[in-house]
Image (tube, rainbow, N blue to C red):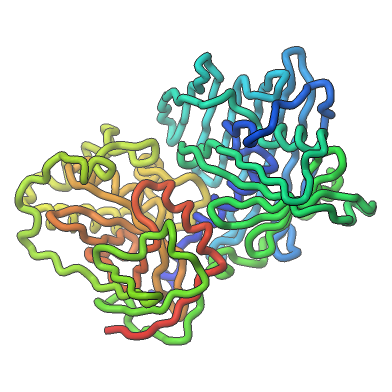
Length: 494
């Protein structure tokens, strides 16, 4: 394997897979555990809800990549929901298997009494469980790499499952053309509340399992990325279509489970890559790059600031030039660095294993720049560059010693913060072999902000790293409005 192909192997679009699963959660409620009732609509009447047992086939450009199974049934106190999803996705030529399981007890009005969510992928497991408390509040337990974290969050209203809300809307025939809904949902992959917007487009007759159905067509907008769903007369979602031709369609159990042993023929990373006309011979050594950016709205993106300057649609990126003495003065603990200094659910800088490693690596080193170089070098040399499809976090990465760009960025951020160095995650595009691929890296404060990429072992990172978003891990979800839309033209470089 050549050096070029190895580096190409390092870059993973795990972001897209997670983003698609979040949108899929509008149907399966895998991401919508704490979805509240849509604006201006009342709770559902339980006696009018039908029990449902639905099998769905998941495809990518007409090729099957997985299935989903959802069962809604009545119990003594309300309802039970059990859901399973399995996907086999091609990531950089490597088949990745992903399985998600959800069980939930629901109150008579479909609000959640408790839930349990498990995501399994290769060697990585993620589990989130919750129970509704008075307030309303939700008590949560999140387990990553065998480490459990407890928390309690406040809710404006009793939490609802998205599917239950759609049942209510379909039952009362409120899905008239032009009708709009807004659903605040809790996303367990970021532990943040997000918003999904739904607009009813009207009626459409489609073929489902050999029968013609009069469906209602809905457009689901999540962070600017759109997905279309078709609902049957009884409120059952029978078809969905999303990014890059991904589809979900109701089929029989036999059809859903058949053919899952085949390798996926299309690669998500290649589908999402941005092609450009110019060829950059030595991208890792570039210190200055100018590109024209088209096809997207700049709102909610972090295109300007620091080493990036935006003029019209032309974006210039220049690498920093930190001096060896940079940041010798102690960094003050003030508001400017608060969000980049503390531990988080996925950046566990307060865990003893991460704190001990950071202390060991930086002990006796004088300047923040030298400390940063030491941390970048350790992650670069000790974490295997390997595609991973899971919820990235620092502790799991340290334990397994493998991961893609997301895992590298999480671990470097945690080590830097544990060493007293403010650190954030940046995400965007990086150039390789004639294309720009989605990628994640860091910026570290050493008396000045400087970009660092532990996947490439760079500090500062080269100028082909185009930052689109930065900050907390959940900021990467803003890239959903960019994927499959952004167009780049290389204007100048050196």
